[in-house]
Image (cartoon, rainbow, N blue to C red; front, side, top):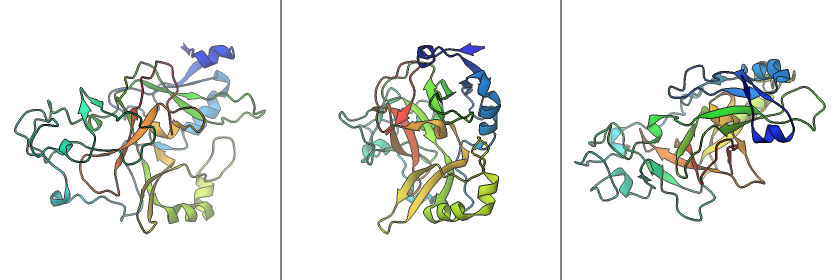
Length: 286
């Protein structure tokens, strides 16, 4: 099986199927293949074997757990089967954003995430689970995505420089794309790992160099500069392959989503399409 993309056609190179399903069935609704030059198959497989695919956060730190106390958790008392902005005491009547036809209503002119927040209904709510319109992220990844090896013409070496993610079908503006998950750590943990012989010996970058290179996303920062981070080096999902763009306008926007709790320290960071995305486009965030 050979997969062609417009960027590959420009450089007259062919992308072949290297891995049929990176999550190995952990994403229930859609497999995530990896494509790239067949000449790099062994390097790609080596790089993919150096992390564990997960669908929920993990942490070695027992203090990094959200407050699941029901008295502190948002919930609705809607009598109707489906929640709406007009429902009394509904989760979507607060300061958060809301969905229309399973699409997030993104305010016009928003390009930076800031404090965009969604409160989805949960098990404590009285609304009907199957028909409630305020349950999107909790349904899981539904998009048809593929990981690809980014071109490496400028590098004379053999190692794989980086990966990217493309959508294999059209994604409408406001659609939920994927949720960012990885290993929860403190900023102090990162500093210790950089000095740790254990992590430097266990983490392989895929090009023969044994080194711990943190790949992080800031989840929370308190007024006292207390930081909780997500590290993708050893654990992660499809989001660890999505590139952050500093030059091209990104087509994804990260949004804080709360489902099972309302603890501000541990939001679910979810990527939504901030514009229509064509099939074959690379996904990026800002």
